[in-house]
Length: 90
Image (cartoon, rainbow, N blue to C red; front, side):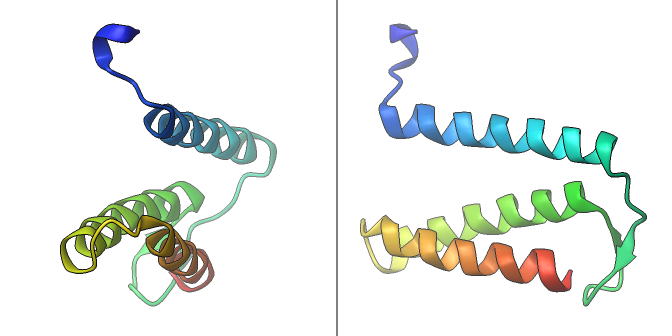
C-alpha cells in the first residue's frame, strides 16, 4: 500500500474506526437496544451516537488545528470529553 502514502498515525486512525464499527455491530447483534430521546430531541441508537461523535470530533480537530495549531494530543482529550457527553446525554 505504498502508493497511498500511509503513515502510522493514518493507519492507526482507520484501524480504530474499523474496530469501532465491528464492536458496535457485535453490540447491536448481541444486545439490541431501543432508541432513546436525549437533549437533541431525536431518537438515537448507539450507532447514531457514534456517528455524531465521529462527526463532531472531526470538527473539533479541524477547529483546534486552525485556532491553536499542531498540538493535537490536547484536541484528543477534548474529543474524548465530547464523546462521553454525547453517549451520556444525546
